[in-house]
Amino acid sequence: MQSAKRIRCERFPCSDVQHDGYRVPGVNVKPERISIVLISEAAPANPDDYYYARGNPLFAQTTVHAFNDAGIKVASIKDLLDLGVYLTTAIKCAKTGYGIQTSTIKECARLLAAELALFPHARAYLLMGDVAIKALNSVAVRAGDARVIPAGSTYKIRGQEFFWRGKRAFPSYLQAGPSFFIEKSKRTMIAQDIARAMRLLR
Image 1 (tube, rainbow, N blue to C red):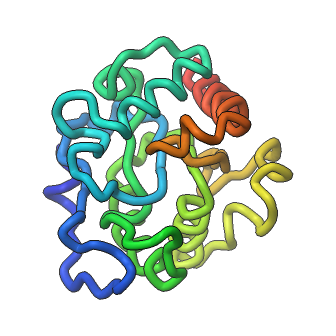
Image 2 (image 1 turned 180 degrees about the vertical axis):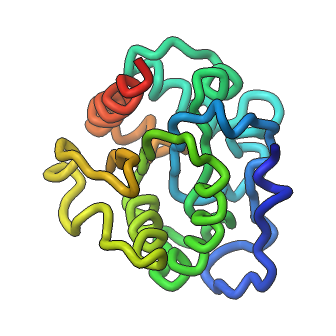
């Protein structure tokens, strides 16, 4: 199954993203084998940096580093998929600036909701950064549920337990892209959150 064949943005209404940077995972996966869905911020400006791009894309490099920091010895995105970890972005297009408008997050959450529905056996969501957190909250509210993650600093709430429809949600920090190497103070917390999520698979 390829998510890209099941999910498509038809209107591209958002004004603060690059529509030619639109990316939905096109990798073949078996939905029943996916236990954790990792959601990061937005598709990269350079398509060669995307998780599933050929070669050694930046998103893959930093994510592999993050999992190794957590004690999960992997060398590639394929290794993560084999462990049952599926990687995607909350925003399917690349950003045009530093931030992302709330309206864009809500619009793209429609696609994220459809994508998450493809993996009914997932046991946890790793929410890498504020945009991913807001996107899952939008998915939940649109489905008629309460917000999954309360407002507040990620630093203060990340140690608490959150659930949405029986699945754990782990608020954390962005692990995809160059900021991972710059913000070393957050790498330890990212590793801790990944390790906590991966313990659910044991």
